[in-house]
Length: 367
Image 1 (cartoon, one colour):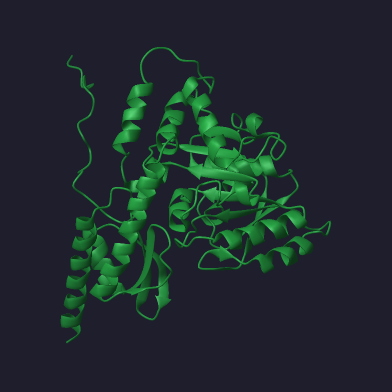
Image 2 (spheres, rainbow, N blue to C red):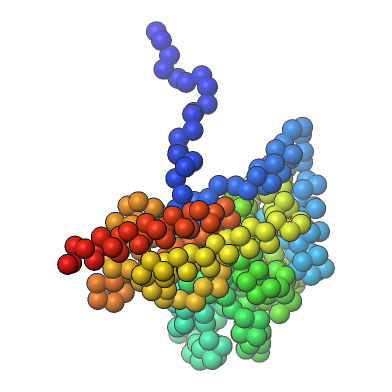
């Protein structure tokens, strides 16, 4: 009987020539991160984080976020958020978030499911929470009929690609700490925000008093590279104990830590985020020149634009991107275009030309 089981690994199952703006998650790994994985391979190394790569990563992140920072290497962005927020709050407390937050809309209720912690949305402008919205929400939750607020989670950069200024963040931290509320940053794209602001990673987080950060590497050149950073052990005393039961502990932690060390041990995080941000700025100019209207401030690596529905549908069939708001205004939809660390000028210019073609075709169809 002839076996049908393949004896070699699969051939490449995707077309590497396909480029798009659907998400920075769609990009591959930066060559330096891939090399770091290869360098970490070989031999037998202690598991579950007792390895030299994780030790070096901890030292590296303490140099960026503070000498007392505690570090927990995890596997996913959702896992980082759930682990961090669970460590910051007590079981009966709630978490405030932007009404656009990823933890609210795009993590399948992970915080509620795993931690039993209610998420309460606050109004936002372009994804950013106003400090004045915090105190009324905290005071309203003090009743025994409500879940008291234990933490505020903020996204930097936001779901709309906007970045909190240092003053804005400081004001939010001040009002939260005055009310006894801790502050968490969902930093899946913290590198993009820091580069946009021209500051370091700690300067836009822990140095302002932020209590915990979900620091992302996956969207910025990593493959599976996320880590929780808290200001000090007293801020989140259960952090180390939570990684395993939240199913975020990798036995071969060295391979996650090696990626993060490649990104944050030097200036790679700045180079990759800077390239993505610059591509987004060029992209905003390209879509505007093609006839679209940019709808949100471009402050990191995302561009939001209004397109006629027919133009959006035809363009997305040629180059991948997402419709954000299907009923934005009249016949227009709001689309999200995300630049990645490997987005080239040629990618952007080709998309601008494609969009101009679709606008011209739509105009001819109406004539």
